[in-house]
Length: 387
Image 1 (cartoon, rainbow, N blue to C red):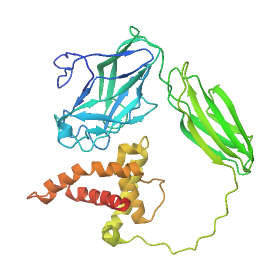
Image 2: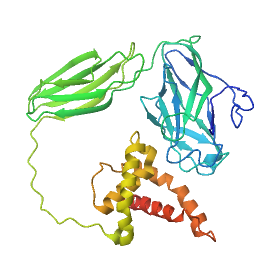
Image 3: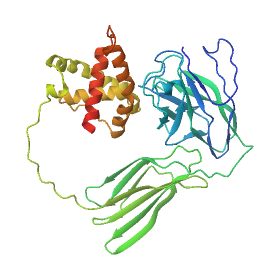
Image 4: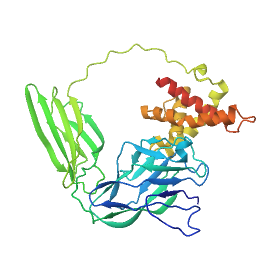
């Protein structure tokens, strides 16, 4: 199996046949108990063309049972030949998945063999258990099955124990449902993954007429669902949901609502639906027919390979949304978010350069030119529509 190297600060000599390449870095990452620590720079090198791809990025995964999590940072920086060659941005917006155990680094274009990147700014949260050297794992195809494992990366030690000053993560995936009779509202959420999490607290400020009531609805409970039945039409409500560990509480997740009967909507005048225009998408009737065949492929690929995180399969998502629009279908509930469009804008640069070199300037166009040209056309369709 091909190996891609990742190193986080340890001088580590490998037997000649252990991996196809060598690795060298400088210092072991030491994490104190109950603390957030910035890790030493991570160095990753591709050993084969296309081993690191724009479709899947680089997923750096923490061992399942270790009492550490990634600490969410909004920006990381990168240097190296992969940055110089436009394969990865110098400033990276990381993605966190699987309860903050997976750190995904977006990639702009497929790496060539030997291209490398140095990642700076990753952080870890350590909890109240010391352990020796542990490993980070690297997944490159989006299935979270590691292509590279057992690389020394960090350990948690009690030689520099500090009082826990790191609040837990907030509740995640908060949803609310207001009953049709306007007499109750139901909240559901997912509690944070922190090992020292002890519960959630919900506070409510209710303005009813001229009276204001500020109460704690419940405190430090491990609920994941709650229905507030102490409401009525006309109430102005502000809910705050905090999470707690043994010493700290998080910033609140805030939800505000005015309880009132929705005003009836005036029926809109029905207009005849516009048929998709072949000219609008620059497609021939034969190409429209072929999309009916490929629609099934795009739909299956989206469902099977991209359900974990659509940002990992952006091009499949582009094809699916585009195909549905052209064919006038709505079978799959899929759309492009503002972030998706942003990612299209930064990821399209390398395919455009490749199309220019291999399809426009080349004496003999590459065999991939037709497919690449269609992909670029579809990406530009969404970029231009967002302007």
